Length: 529
Image (cartoon, one colour):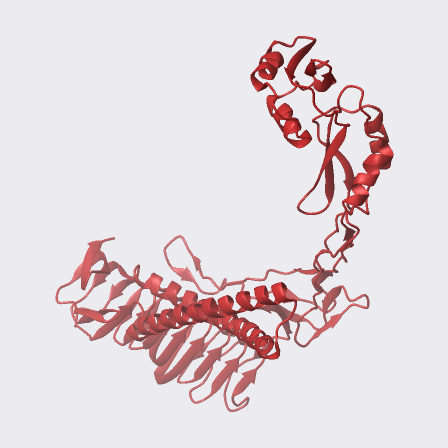
């Protein structure tokens, strides 16, 4: 039992009776007494005597602390939590001989506070019979809402599958073992949906309904050659082929397999992946939204892939070949290609007299590892064994970001700053009008129209800021990579080679071995590997 105290009015003055706790209960604190004196409006108490009595009390003690005062009945203080789901009560003793709180009186106190739900009457009856003063009791509890659980989709295949050649023990690269596709058979389960679980409303102690977090639904997003199961919870392949995930949309394609791209097939344009077991002859084109794999030679043709481009043998471009892909490119060699544009990384053994541009790395690290002639550019890294040759063939290799991209980044920064200023002003207008609406109960027609327009413009501004920030972050990552841009030479770079780092260039006048080039300040310098 906790310790407690009681004031007592006698003819000769006001007394305080202090009782020590039992069995490890909580002792009376001076703060409890001061709070009680304040709430009961007792004046002229001898606080030093009370403090001395609290310290010296072993069992019980009675001390005169002032002149006679009006008696106070037992009373309680009630606090409702900020989330309105809990009511706590602390009870204070009445004067000796004064009345005590009954369970009905406690319930009436709660009702006067507006508490309508979750009153624990059984607990209140127990408290009324035997209560510890100055202790927090939970006397009412609301019913918290149960938030809904969002639906989600689990994919049953490897969602990221990259073409990457295998480096053998002798240092050569195996361009055959690439394993680029997720193969599926008709009836295979591609994705499983776990449906949403609705939320359950709650009720606060004042009897008001608390709405739960609403569960979000989802749907399968998919292309052709798939069906949804009868229960709507599985996405199934309807053909034999391969599956890919682009963003949040599933694609299944029959592999379009041809021997050669020539006069017998004409140009090929396909929504999916293409496998060519032979060659792509000069003058023809192959365009696919997915991956393209060519087991033979690409001549002076056009090959464009929305995904990865894999050329098992290579390109004899005749100065006419155009090769483009958004993903990675793997090829045995590139010779006399008019244009090569790669969104990801390029892996090859040899680049001869070709114009190449990649957003990722260029690794020319096969058995030969040659870059000779042409113009080869990468945003991040060019790595080769040999660049140029003994004859001084004009060769250009460049890394880093085009200066125009940096200018675009600065413009984006200014646009975002301007949008942020607009957002701040709109927020101020909306906040001011809403406060006026709360204070006055309503707004006149002009101000209400201004509030609606400002709110709408605020939403549009925030959307524009999100779009600009995403574009800024993507471009900023690209520019950040520019600071680490390098050209690595594991054997030799020859004179006649021109190095370009963004807007800075350097002509190689002497042969360099086992080195790497990077930009230092406004200069390009060579350091050991």
